[in-house]
Image (tube, rainbow over the protein chains, first blue to last red):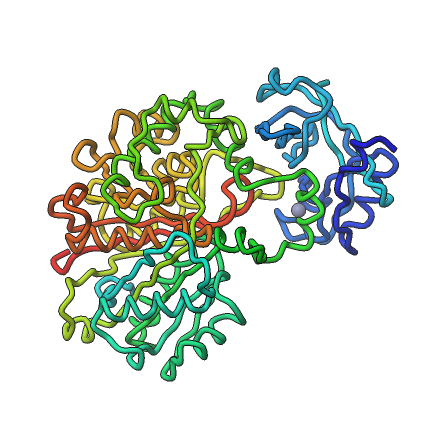
Length: 129
Length: 391
Ligand SMILES: [Zn+2]
């Protein structure tokens, strides 16, 4: 409903990524989990990027993480792109939202917040924990 | 089996334009081919191999081969790794020549993003990886912020400063003042760089390369062809290439694919960092140069900031003269792809034909390095080492 939400661009969804994006509508963030080698990975995909096993599934995350790196984009409406390292291990590309960008720092604790795309899914972004 | 001494760069040409209003993309490619042929002293019918990348219109090299009327082509390679493509092409051409598949290979790059922007045409081509598209585009990655995050992390891990990064732009500007074709010829200071507007923190406007039209071309030939030509021989001594990506989520933004392409090139050439008199280092951003220099072993990982400071990259002043044409930071970045011009200036240095104010004395061995894609996600690195006839 809000203007902010309307601006979030919906992801391109395909057979590989459908389950991941459907879960985001329920406020769930997943990563890939390999039952062969035990690694968590991102983005999710049917074959494990570490051992190539097909014994993979989605694994729900706590939504907690720390900032690995970030950049505040200048302009009329500044926004922050970031890599966040999840508690489960993988580092994922995202945005940092709803906080003072000037006070951000690498290593800072963050937690997931979802932004509705209006197309049946939501983008996982992060704010200061 | 190695390419060492089996192939030579015989001709080069850099397009003088920086704004190609009224010229088509295929026209630019063809003008570049013509210029490089003239430089080599060869004719169109001598070309038996053609190399291009994603900037070339049409399907692979086929459309350009038809457009240029090349009738003897027996090797085609349109390997696409972004701006580093053309450095890879030098390697691939040398391999094809070494194995007897061709004798005269033409490589072209051309682009007109500045003219496209003014004329309203499509700015950038290329597709997205279907899987990655949904996981990245919505977060509004830009070329600048995807490099900026590398700088931010490098600063965090190694204490690198904006002032140290600025020295890279300062060195490029000292060189650009002597290049009549450079887009920005003014000499800048560290203060100018750090006081220029932040585009995507921590990168300032002067940490970013210019956007220009133009292009370049290279001709690689077999030794028996080189012997018949009048231009100074530039020998291809070694090459290496490597992609680097997000590693399934084990992200590390503090190094590039040069960590792998560099050692391969040095090994094949049989030389080490101390032998390199001049280096062309892809400079899409200052951080690109800093991480690449570390990865290539010119200094220890994390010590790049100290290495580039105090003019160490300025010809006649520092220990490692770099990008003496002014590079992408000041001279040009045709089609948003800087690998080609890196090869060109390295050839000029080995030939002794760089501008006298920036020519490195006795430049018998030089290195050129390309970085394509995004340092902040997935990229292709390519390194070539060039030498003179006696190397
Ligand atoms: Zn696995």
